[in-house]
Image 1 (cartoon, one colour):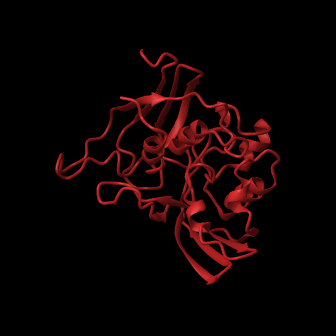
Image 2 (spheres, one colour):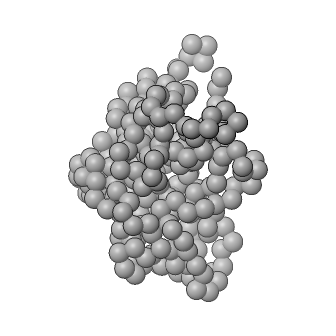
Length: 246
């Protein structure tokens, strides 16, 4: 069967590691590890989340990248509610109506691929991502953060956001798989931008292994993913069918 955009985003943004890959208790008491998950995929124009608004790019990056927050998913979540919870963030608080402070998880590792080579994620990575998001020319999603005045790395694991005005959607935007995944500065510096498959380096549950335009995109399990025991499956394959009847 074909998957709709909403279904794929929901599936990819689990962080796909959690709910979709942990069988319900009605089906299995103990999840089984290994195997591959295959679905009908779509070749993106490129892989830079700040230079396109294409949902095909964001679906692909939802397997490899993390966000500060994520939308809850799984059998216990009411469809259409889009509640959020911590992803890279352990917790956050409001200092006032226009100031948010996030505390990051410790020990989160980037994918063990050059030039990042599996180093620990820090608050500077979050600051770099939001600064790039706000300043890079051609970012069609910049309007999502139009109320963001400043991003500060207070210490290694603490990020502070200051807004120009109250924004009821701010936390929802930070959870959005369509734009705000955290990216690595080293990858931008090495490749010039994040368009190439080689630049797809995140902290998510799977690492991009290969990409054949209009054919197949393959991810493999991130061995140091920060959610203990996840993901359950070892391989994700997005198969692009140019002919819908194929």
